[in-house]
Length: 336
Ligand code: ADP
Ligand code: MN
Ligand code: MN
Ligand code: MN
Image 1: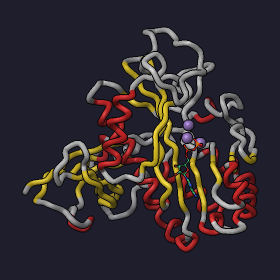
Image 2 (image 1 turned 30 degrees about the vertical axis):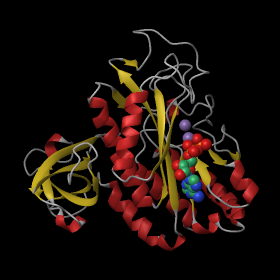
Image 3 (image 1 turned 45 degrees about the horizontal axis):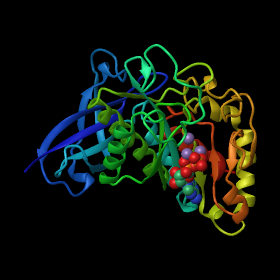
């Protein structure tokens, strides 16, 4: 039986990698990642190679069932290697893998809140052509045709994520009309980051059907409108256990010390979003606190009350690379 496998990878686009994919037909079904062959592509078309000698290698690393094609068809996320067999410079997953293995015994969990904005043509979905809707206020978790735009697409995307077996844990309409969020996790670093990329791919692919595009730009509309982030919730086994709150405070102090290094890699154009307004802390500053949605890092109230749990890094922007953000959190918090 022939099956279709969609090979998905991140390109070399700067400053923000874009998703690419293409289909290979093989004899199926497939029951293990080792049965999915390596493949190649022309790196000169994806900003991953120069003119001649442009072949790059796609190495399958995680597959899920394809909820759109159904049957035994698959989606597979790939790492990119050079023809010489080295991890390509754009392959941020390979670097996360090293660090995830190094700190495996700490059993880190990540829960990522992916915000995004739907666009129809040049305006956010539901916005009057060339104009603005009513000011923000009623839209967050709203209901009703005058307040919520794109629910059909969002529901289809959720169903597809569930059917594909992703660790999707919820969705909600956001503060700016046309803006939404889905959450992946909690699960391990490679799993969470792979699944964010797969869920993004499913979102873009689902949008094709109604000619709606999703953007991850951190500030899709300038002015008094909320930006789009990717709050990254993080815990280690010790943080989740009795007395973990002290370790969470210690983690916050480590993150404070490394604020500048982190913020530079938390997504392009993030300074447009982290202004100190709209439930953010300024790009320049670092603050942490219990239940504080104007902080860089928030300790959820339930965590403070229970004395253990997790922290929420509110700084990553919607267009961040989860391989980079998860790696930096592991390095800073789990390292000495
Ligand atoms: P918010 O109140 O900030 O909107 P959400 O409910 O959108 O929070 O997202 C919270 C995220 O935190 C979810 O993705 C959830 O899976 C994740 N999460 C819950 N517990 C943990 C934990 N112990 N470690 C890491 N992430 C967690
Ligand atoms: Mn949320
Ligand atoms: Mn949100
Ligand atoms: Mn949040």
